[in-house]
Length: 266
Image (cartoon, rainbow, N blue to C red):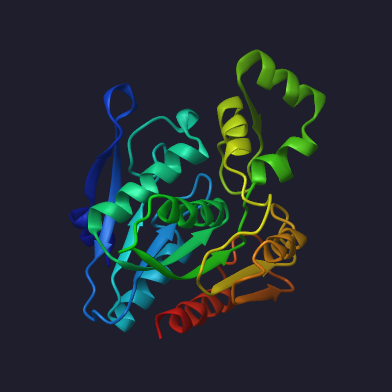
């Protein structure tokens, strides 16, 4: 899609009610091959649905005839809502609402960074809701960051950051990907504890392909190994990219993503 076509195709969904209501921007590519599951993009922290990997997923969908769903979390991209109100529970609610709205019954969840955490939680919630007519047939997780608030942020907080959380309710850190600083709120961190998945066996009931850069400064590659330990019942493939960073957006990285998606769609 061109940017103009994307803009024309954006549909806003209202998620939540009252003061918690927010408009979620979505992009939907209808499927031409009903035998294939729909691809669902779950983006990372402060990323949006127009990123390189999201566009690669959409390209694979167009190439194969699969349906594709993309959306921006509240406080991200073209969606409404305040970023500082964001939590894993809030963004998970939005992901499930988008999935429910478009009504596809067979899915491949494609989660990048924080989106990997939300993908894992989405599977758990779909099982808990006994949504028997919705089946996750596969997952592709790129530099997945499950439990990142608990495992990667909290243990490394400085005294100054802890003081900022206590006094202001948030702290900032320099971002390597944006001129604007990353903002981590007390609400995000506290909610993250309630959404942890690396506490026991995770049963997705589907094949999982993890792509992880070994030169990732944000999510250490050993975190992907830890995730694998919690997926003992699933068919899990881990692809380690020796010189890959957190983004994994180089042409050779995107080729690996496309190959994983093609495998899930077959």
